[in-house]
Length: 187
Image 1 (cartoon, rainbow, N blue to C red):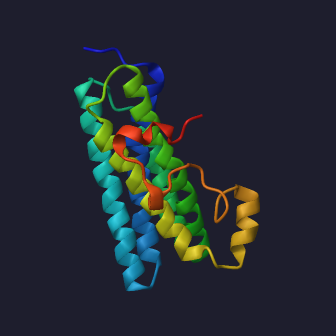
Image 2 (tube, rainbow, N blue to C red; image 1 turned 90 degrees about the vertical axis):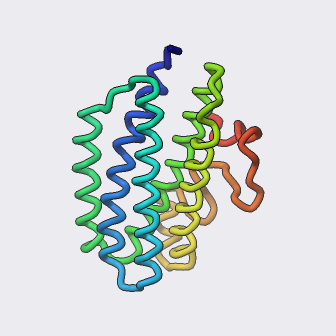
């Protein structure tokens, strides 16, 4: 069995637990919006997060990586708090922070792919690539919903994400294939 480095193990454990937090958050987000089309799209994003959690678990199980009880607790609480806050934050903020979060999540999966590839492991490339691309699609969905809102300029300046700045370099319009995606999210 190949020995994985600590950074990769931690990244997998965090991603597994954080996907639960995201799914919980989207339950509240979907519940707080009135538009049925938006509600359905957010519910689909919630399902995507549960699927990502299952995919990360399969990888963890393959390498006998335990689920972190601390991360499970921490992200469970965070997800529930975010879920409840969607009902009181108004319409804009849940969209903004979901987009910002998804923007950063894109790189989680591309960094995992890079860590595995550095060890000569390529069997997870496709699933990690697909999860990274799916997170980018989520980011674009949330950004498109708010990009023309008045509050956007203010939030962009404070939180450094929005129309002019992403937390990743993935371009869905000019998407690279799996085998050339190593340029994504390089530090």
